[in-house]
Image: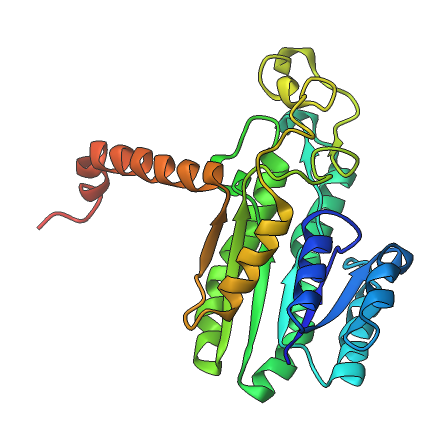
Length: 276
């Protein structure tokens, strides 16, 4: 019976994944900044669920959560770095402190959690790290540059990590959801406080007061949770899992567009070598 440690379980995909993991008969360390928000899951699964307070930007809580998981269940077999939030601002509008906090959560928090579980995974020569990214890391919409950058950083680190730990029996899966009906674009979404009028028709269109997609997203987070479990349990887990038709189609369109640009500039690229 594997043990999953999932960050950011109070709402959305994290909560759906925690429930699905427990319903599959696995053990789950269900974390949130307010553990009371996930207490109902422990009440339903008292023998296999453990609720913990966890702010991934707090180094002491990161270490304590992994230690508690090891004490209760013997170790962490699957880490899911799900904790994170969105931030919308034109690049010029971004507040330095707000951006630093965004990266502290979306990138450095995930790195800290990963570093905390790796010693145990290395000792057992098994495990999986699942990093929840976003199709935004690929399409980089106007107004989401900072968020996309935080997730792109996580994806790049994940790719290197995968090469480092594969010989040790540890897999790394990057999950790129498209639009899912969670609170991501609602209460959880943050944005620059002082918009600049020159960006009204680009980044400004995606400000919360102008974006009316919340509550109408096509993706079902319960089905996304099942897809993540299937990927982790596969004989060969995918290095990247696109979730949602919009995520998949965006990937394919980007691949075609990038190939066209690379081919168009092939001669210029190759001609930078020394002659002869």
